[in-house]
Length: 472
Image 1: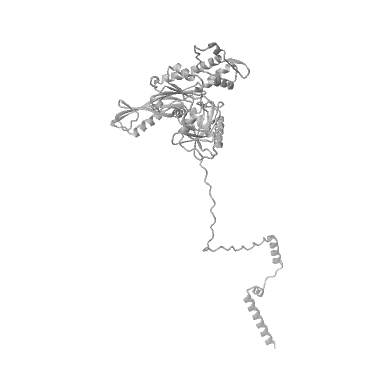
Image 2: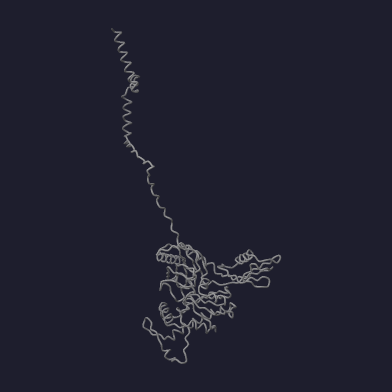
């Protein structure tokens, strides 16, 4: 099916690179037209591209696969940016007016621009989340139109290493794919997963990925804190390889038998639970209790660090909507229960899908939380990413003759004279020069016109008659 209007997005994660194309409808729902993914562990680590050549090749493959499903060329894509170095930094910028006046848009823009000039060593500002504006002694979310003499803008800057952004841009540039925008992936995820009530009341969003775990804190519809931890689901998988199994098999065991929070009940037979085993590919049997001890230890470390970041944000007691878990790592059984145990918070939920309705072919997208960031990037898109087809010029029809128009009569062209032998002609001229005598006046006269020859003939006859008369 050929389409002419759609939004395309690409996410470069630590375990896979995924691409999606679709449309946004007026009711807020998303329609997925194409989706594809492939492994990215060979060129992305902790969310950072470290092999630009391999990343560019993978981007080309993703774009080609999407174009094949769409039947249409892609001109540009939205790309998500994130990684281990991404974090939030607070900054305040103040201005004092000469006299009390009304705060204008120009003054607020000047404060934002001055905040953007914040000097950072080996870091760059990817996005800014304005907090509040303090006018004299009062806090305002929207300061425009408020009277005051002293204004201080408080900003939350999202910063990352220069290399993170540079490597991502170079990968798309080498692939020959234009980017419509570089969107901070955690922000797109939060807007897609969290409800309006959760954003307003206050909540913490914990995205457990393959190599990283991102913690965000929201209150009053404003981002208050963001941090990326270098821990994820892959750490659990690598821990299981100590059982002398490959990572691929370890991942299957984790998803099939893993439990992050094993709490045997007093009423059940604990001996029977302890004797439960699973069979490996090589025929060995491993007790599930030993398997889950490894999984639970690493899962507890990841979630404890995530809760510690929530505490450092200073909004620990203001999160009325609780904790929201998402990402591929959140699909591990027992994760939600373990976080309740560590944080002593009852309001914990797992978001394996986004808030908006998604219309797609069943089986196209995963439903374990891994697709949430990709769908968030799609929801953030506003520009048509389809390539504009070049207009084809149609030949103008020949004018039809009417009864008032005279038909043109084509006169055949005379045949072109055959080329003469110039060399032979030159030789004949040379011979004529040597043998031909100079022409007399009478001979020259003979070469005149028809009337001239006739006059000469008449004159000769008269002269002949006169000579005969004289002789007689």
